[in-house]
Length: 172
Image (cartoon, rainbow, N blue to C red; front, side):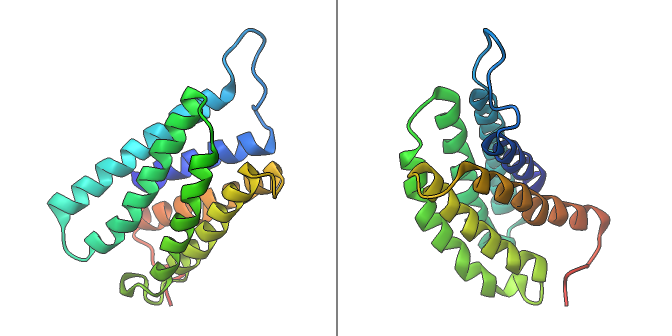
């Protein structure tokens, strides 16, 4: 649930930053509000997964849920910020510690020999850095948009597909 929801949010944000569906329809609400709702709901799905794993499943999944908690927080506050039309600078500011928080998970024992999950941490570190750079005018929005599409596919949709099919590809 969490992988798919986060992937949909990353995808919607990516298309928005590229410019697809970014202009409001005549007399309509700005599409960033809809992207915000999608991100907010993804954040709630993340929280539901974190709580379920934390209190029901337990075990080694708890360590991964610390990372999922940070991402759930990010999508929740990003969603509310976009939905309500608030300033994105505080979101950009939390992207730096989130980017740094992701890096130690490259060596996490649960990701041992899992190229997909290890590389996902690098992809997300770059994504969070790009978010900061775009908000502060240091990078083009389209760069972030294309990177978020890659992020959605590589870090969320492919892991979800691998879990759903019981596959082990990209685990060496």
